[in-house]
Length: 134
Length: 397
Image (cartoon, rainbow over all chains, first blue to last red; front, side, top):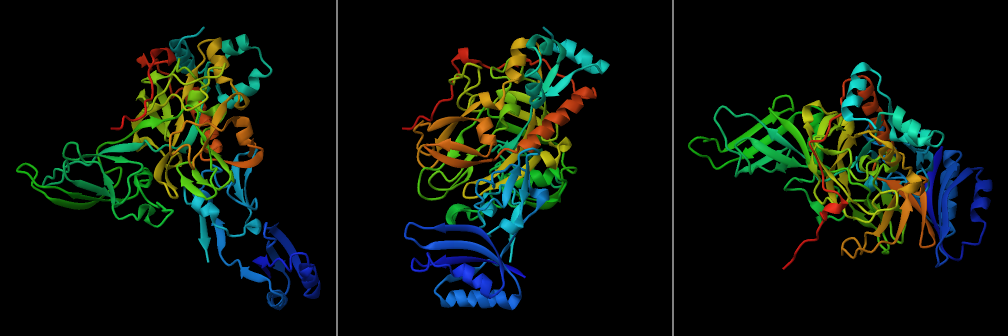
């Protein structure tokens, strides 16, 4: 199974190799969708873990016990292509490049794997082509 | 030198040469202007973006017991229409909202359904609830009416847009430190994104910068059907500063457009919800430009790289009409996906669909090639830069 999470690392944890230890221990594949450290040195990571279900959740529990705050990304963002006019106003809002414009065909494309469900596209789409299902 | 009459003769004989603005730009790179001006008869353009000054005139026909909606109130799917006309004529504008829409009380408002959406539903043939309240007269006694209509049941449905097809438009950015919700879309703080709204090198009025071929009566592609230019648009501003190639550096000319809604298509007329702002109508327009001489050929071949748009801050400068322009960027830069502004690289998004604009230019090209669409000689031309005609700010007392 694959699950996406938003993780907040307090400043004391930012420089520790926590994720690499955890993914090895629980035999997980990971994909970092977004990462940044704020001026206050708090780290934010949007990451997808894939592996056995029990391992994914045990890994999350262990991270929590170390002081990492974790939110599971539960909502599922979808594009209703029939409502999309390929205007591209969403692509400059999307923080991960999940929405992008094919600059040969000028068609707007959506890659759900890269989506972190920030829902900015839902607010930004004039034709209500982006929807959230939970 | 050619005339519109000569071009129409060629259309009728099936000999007309039509290119889209995208195609002529490519061709001009390798062909001499004289030769192209001689061989190409028509260049088609296209645009597809939200145009708030749009709406429809509707005539419902009379109920058995007659009602005078004029002076009363009329709702279509709960959206109010203007009824200050004769008994059963109304005008429904794109930005009209249901009386009970929360608007921005829960900021930013969603504006899921308004006049633009009713127009889209009409065009798609959906049933619309019509409710009218009247005061009753001797000749029009009925005081309340509730029924369902479709576009096929009513008499006239005329799309009449007082301002469409802006010649160039602002690129909107946000210099403040909070997200703002504008008619140019959601703008992230601290120059988080830059939104533009023009098809650039395909956009009709950028290809005939002085409106030398477009005027009252020009036949056009409107919302998937045929329409006409029926006046210059509101806020028409021909005297703006231009670059050497004639293209205005800020929004300049506009057009008023009219057409029979019954022959339009939902693919080219769509309701829009602009979060925190309101509803609108996304309108597809294509205008054919007859290549009467080399000067016109040069204008239609102006590429994205040579069309500059002003970058404007929508957090302070736009709402307070400061007139401040942060910079100018060209449509080639805008279409690349990022621009550089104040030392920062900013992702760009467009409210206008270039893909749809291309489709419109292609459809119009096919209509002309097949002989079903003839060009028109304008009945009169609109005021030019020399006229002194100006877009004035409001006089406030």
